[in-house]
Amino acid sequence: MKKVPRIVVVGAGIAGIGAASELRDAGFSDVTILEATGEIGGRIGKYQLGKAWIDTGAQYIHGTSETNPVYCLSKKFGILDNVPKEEGRWSILSEKGSRVDEDFAERVYGAGEMLIRKRYQDHQRSIGEHFVEEVQKLTANWEASTEEKRLMDGILSMVGKDLLIDTGASDLKSVSLGSWKYFHADTDGDLNIEGNMFDLPSKLLKEFPDESLLLKKPVRKIEWDGSFRTGNGEQHPVRVEFGDEEEILADHVVVTISLGCLKAQASTLFSPQLPEHKLQAIDCVRFGTLTKIFLVYEEAFWDDDVSEISLLWEDESPVSLDADPAQWVKHLHFFSVMKPKEKFGNVLIGWCAGRVGELTETMKEEDLLAAITEHLRAFTRNPSLPPPKSMFRTQWYSNPFTRGAYTYLPVGTDAEVMDTLALPLSGTKATKPDLQLLFAGEATMKSLYSTVQGALLSGQREAQRLAQHYGKVASPASHCSLSPQHQGEPLQPQTVL
Ligand SMILES: Cc1cc2nc3c(=O)[nH]c(=O)nc-3n(C[C@H](O)[C@H](O)[C@H](O)COP(=O)(O)OP(=O)(O)OC[C@H]3O[C@@H](n4cnc5c(N)ncnc54)[C@H](O)[C@@H]3O)c2cc1C
Image (cartoon, rainbow, N blue to C red; front, side, top):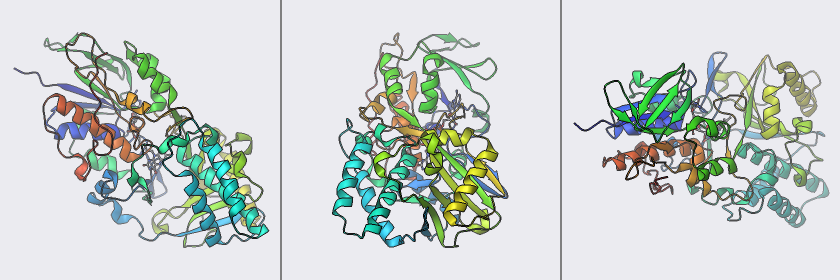
């Protein structure tokens, strides 16, 4: 009788969930998910703040086209039904109390964004260098009063600092200009679904058998290229050790742990060690971080129609943008307002990237609260602005099962290296590729890394790779018009070590 392939998926983030559910849909009956924490979702995390649940990780759908599986699925599952339809106003508070005309700010901000959000090809140059050069030209050619020119520098600095939030990096001079060279065009435009994203993993995993999802089971060792025998004599090439000395023998393991975890554990998690090309790829791509600070106020100090608040330092220059921990408050410059107010109350989210993110998630809570309050008092020109009544901050960098927020590309690294991260590995004893180890997760998608849809599609890609391997027909991915292959991520040739 033909053996049923036994498949283990390591990690119940959206990549692991995408892989496991797609494998089941393709007819694989023996699929087990091992998740280190007590929750599914990974970086789509949730936390109960007062009466409402909030998203501690992803909250924006990047791209609202029908080709984005996260958008399609969110629509299908009714997740978007509770999302406010109206976008609010952007409010800018200046440090020196100057009134900042929002139309002017939007024009300058838009022009600044155009300078950096392109699919440049050059990965040997940094986005920071490019930005500085282009910003100088932009400012020189912009017709504006002296007062407006002074504000321009501050507004363009905000563009740079917002890009640090988007990359999780500490310094734009370390980020490759060619970061989005292969990026999927349909990611433009964001839909904020804060407080709803966490529904996606559970909805996707609804049909998956409970007994095959093992929570609080950190995987400690993956022995592969071996020959392990079960009690009833079946032989498998991979042995996965997890939890308290438990084990599963498997034919295929889909590894979906974050790049941060791979960086920390790649040399000890696998036995034999991963091949050099894989280790090098893990080493050269970077893993940035982002901290979200939720501030709960008794009363709002912003107007009802405001959805975003930016703090503008008039003496700041885009020429020297570095998330320097000594200047960390300058990098707590952006707050989004949680909406609707009836559901969440008066809650702001402050965003800090890179080394400032690391600092704000580890510093004493009372020091953080005091500094934020002082900061906001100065910008609102209200010395008696009450402090928030409570605060919650995320700690993705300190979390041993995440170790940061998302992947970015350093100068000198072409995103093609992500194809190497995605390459499956086969055993040396097999006469043809046997796909013992497969790799998914946002860091393995050069056209969509750092996003939820990238992670989801990467899991589905690996499920389809296995389906092809066994001559099965995988169901159309995600009920969406695009499958992972169409998203510009062809299934890699299957390699033997
Ligand atoms: C603060 C923040 C904000 C973000 N905002 C957005 C956004 O607005 N829009 C967007 O598209 N993306 C956003 N992202 C990125 C997005 O959340 C990720 O790209 C995506 O969720 C990654 O999914 P994944 O499955 O690849 O990895 P993960 O979600 O990290 O899943 C990996 C899983 O593996 C588990 N694991 C780790 N080690 C082990 C082990 N040894 N054994 C067993 N299990 C293990 C982890 O616990 C985790 O559940 C954000 C991320 C963060 C942190």
